[in-house]
Image (cartoon, rainbow, N blue to C red; front, side, top):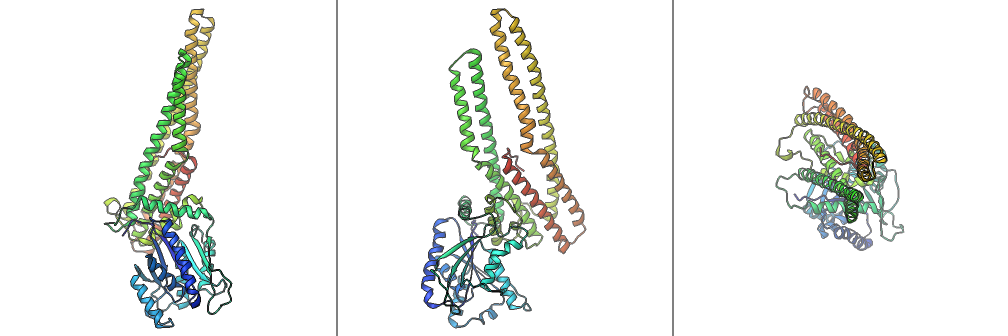
Length: 524
């Protein structure tokens, strides 16, 4: 299994294509798919198809010609499905494409399910699974619950029916075509692109795909030995968060160092009248500004830390759901209703889940739901205590600087008075002393203000303590109930699912808070 997040396409279209349109259709669709292969060289393209006659087989054949991965999902039993085909040539094409397919599945094995209901379900599956739904459609809207019109309608409106923005970031590409049963459709066989959801529009969609392609370039490590792509990405994002945290802290200290050098040089020049120190002052401020503007203001380090930390946690929750046997993807609940900058992560989570639904043992440690819950209880307890200690420490430091400033302020007035009444020979000494004290008092009050009014609010210790305590209580209550339940029971799975939702909500709060305030992050 290759470590690559794919772009997933699906196809919905009419069965009765006109033969005279096939060459034009092939030419335009082939060029369209080739553009994706050219623009996103690090990303695998996957076509999911029901392999029905007409449009499905046409696009699947083009995918085969271009070397695009084909995954097949039939709505019901293969033999019965093939009995609906009109000729042997279609069955032969189906057999060839089935042999080429990397994955072959049947959506419904319930023989009692109505076939029209199966077609409705396969349409919803194609729209939900794909990032880009291609529809070869005559543009005629119908009231049928299955068919191309129904799939297009679901793709456009299914988002509104969902409490969470599950389809945000998906796209619908429509080629309006005539068909045997409706030949009088005017068309130029061009492909028209629609962005679904409410965040990703136009160029933002391209930007999202570019980010995924860049991620694939970063994680291109060949074939996985343990067959768990989810585990590989969890490790990748965890390590990326740690590295970006270290860089961020290093750059923060560098800015403080250059700023301190500038202040010291300025004061030395002022006290001892050594003009060359003005050069140190200028260089110090310039370097501090350069580090801030070039390396920190753009926010890339903070962005990388925040999304990496949040993403790794989302995969841990997904793993817990997989172990509990829940057929749920965290992508539907991850950072919903957030700015488009996070939507590409939801697509990555969604496509990871499509590729790999198997549970795994993270970092070589055997995983269990009980172990996950016990670990979370300990984690939130420790983090809450840690935040309490840090909060108390910084509040103490704030008071120290404040009272130091008050004491120095009194000394300033004392030395000012001494200078006023001193002899001419001593005035210069007293003046230098109270000038220096002015600097000390200013710095003291500045630090007191920064720590008390800015730093503690930006870092958000009180807010984090609040959320950590809530999550600690949630996991303790869940543990009490789960200890008395069968792991295979529906109630057990329901509680694990609910815990995952709560953990995702806490994760969302953390990500949004740190993204908003750009605080110096502490790795969780």
